[in-house]
Image (cartoon, rainbow, N blue to C red; front, side, top):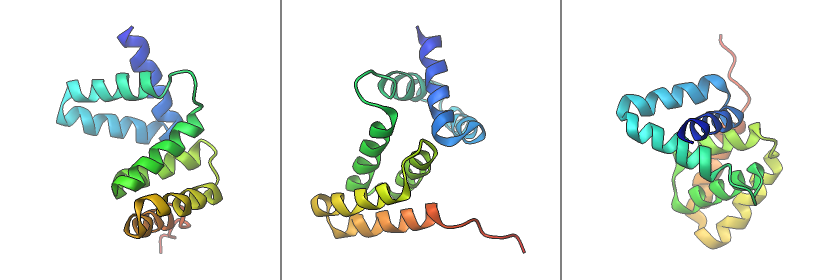
Length: 127
């Protein structure tokens, strides 16, 4: 069962962030603590994100909403990238920010706008 959850977790993380980023994130967490890395991969991504009843896109929107309301900028940026990778349009993320701002406040909206601007900025050319 754990092996199936571990596989599903890594598949979902790869879908959200790509293979390299998913592996790098896993290595980062494993370097901190193997058990915690396993827990997050198997339970959060392998089990919770894969439950029936809500599609991945909606789970992604809910995650961004929660992170925005909690003022968790770095994680919000990470999940905005994941949202774009699973097909959530930039316009939908903008609407999420505007909508949630009325419930979480202007400071959280401004931080979310900073995150959105950074995540959707065109790549800088190497000169």
